[in-house]
Amino acid sequence: MSTQETTIYSSEQWSNWLEQLANKDYVFVDDFIPDQLYQQVQSYFQQLIDESEFSKAAIGTDQQRQIESSVRGDFIYWLDKQSDDEIINLFDLFDETLLNLRQQMFLSVSDYEFHFALYPPQTRYEKHIDQFQGKKNRVLSMLIYLNEEWEPGDGGELKIYGPGDDTTLFEPIAKRMVMFKSDTLEHEVLLTQTSRKSITGWLLHQPATIGKLI
Image (cartoon, rainbow, N blue to C red; front, side, top):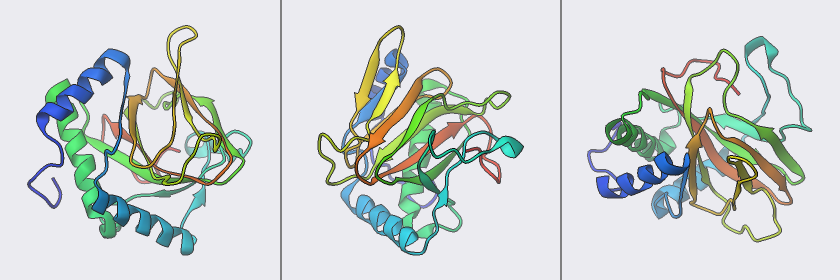
């Protein structure tokens, strides 16, 4: 852990969640982020918006990166444990997640990378998978939603595609966490009618590198 010795959740809670992940390739947990930390994250998110720190997200890797707003409409800000100390406890939660994945699922995950994501109204992210050809570093995708006033009809749901015609829809309500296998589950962000905020990231085989994949 980076700054704390205690954990937010017990090993029993993690065991139940990770058993669901193992059985279904995805899991969701409501009220995943504690109230005090949630408020810190919301405040910092807004500060970054006010300071124009978000950048238009691209698709592809390295020299092949392209901005395609019709495919992906979000703006992002990459989080860094060294510089984003206003939300250091959020990194503790990431560390706790990483530790339990190693200990309980015996996954070879050694690092993570996360960013804030902001979808303006009338944007989406078309169906895709969180892996790139020749880049197999991402093991699990993880999202924590920050939308306090989300209501049915606001859009922006996460749609996960399972075997055959099986699909699962997750409403992006505040404090909900969704985790799923990066290399097997196709998914999309449906068209949002209102601003949609999240923490989005990946648990990795190898340490994250500078100039992260989008």
